[in-house]
Length: 425
Image 1 (spheres, rainbow, N blue to C red):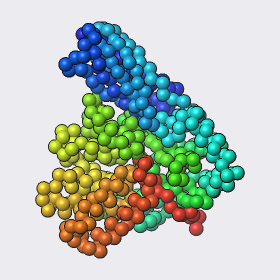
Image 2: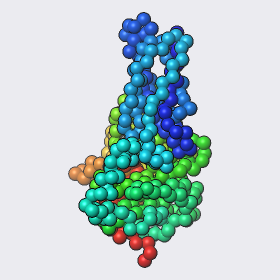
Image 3: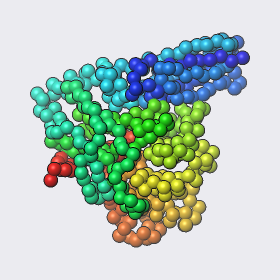
Image 4: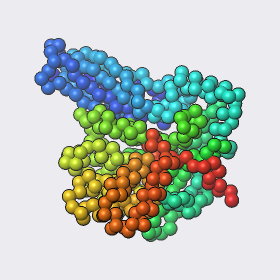
């Protein structure tokens, strides 16, 4: 005796917000007789947006909980009868502007009321002196770079299609990356590849973000990339990168907020584990999404089938995509977690070196895992498998990078000295 909940996320239908990855948990609290069942129904799904998502359930009373990518939780209590159909619509979006809809859903800018208060405070503080320090000296720039852990080997402006829009203090740039970034043919897989970066400079600092991609969506299109600059965000780390990619946004938002354990519990009764497997399996279509899924999947313990199904594929993620330092870091992390011999540990250490040589990770989680992996070997004689000098240099460079990176973001964003890099010299 079943029924159906139709789940809707109340939001404006636009190309950039439909299907933004809200996680809805459906928990049964009583059966149709009002009795708590011996095996209550529970599931979690990634809602597809305003067009609605159907969930078949046994008749009874339910608690429904929608977790939005920005961290908000909205709850509803509903009763559904046998063969009944119940519409549950969660109010979600009060964006300050339509063009900030995706940023509001992702939690990068607050909802309308808080946004207005923050903007007013920013515009009035210190008679505008503070505002002047944090206002960009020039518009955001996209650069084509070859990045190592020590700095930038090559820099040149990147010619990308860009739309931009601003209000009194926030700026948003939207672009897509080309399929081919003009790398040399058959590059050395141990060396960094050409990447796209976004840079904004103020009198206080240069904010430098690596843009992930090309990022291919499930339908084979190149996803829009949004870059936000908001000087009111904490620690002057106001440059934020978002991928406009439907239900994957939930995965990316949890990854950026470092709430992966919470996410794994939230999705546990649903299809989160299956989504991770699918994304890693489809790594040829989108290695960046595969890496994001693998970082999330590391919350599952070694031996858990939700991790064991895709763990063997990480070696291919490392070997097939030299443009993605994260593949080697993920392989090393997984090998460390399941190491049973000195040989396993040395394989992991050499994979960490491969990730290091390919340059800064695309994901901020990669910096953390790379540093943690090297720290594991710091007091071990096995570090001599690389040589004392090389190991110490790696550890020093990654530690320095970690000090520049914002760990509260999904993708790698660095706070550098003012005036760096100067692409006009």
